[in-house]
Length: 75
Image (cartoon, rainbow, N blue to C red; front, side, top):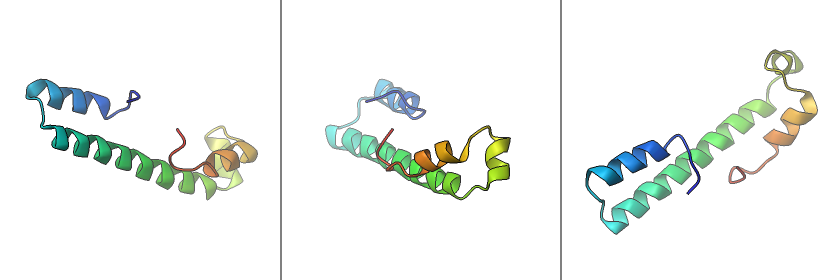
């Protein structure tokens, strides 16, 4: 699994008491689903920003459009 903001939580939980295999799998699936949901939400919001706001965050329209068009599972 790639290093994410959620990785320390998973490592902490694994270190406390090893989770049963099914619980560990369910936790990892939940982390992936949350990550995908966050990507979809933020990419949708990025695609809706106007030129003024894009300039404020230092992005050009074509770069923002390219990122907003990526699928949620693409890192």
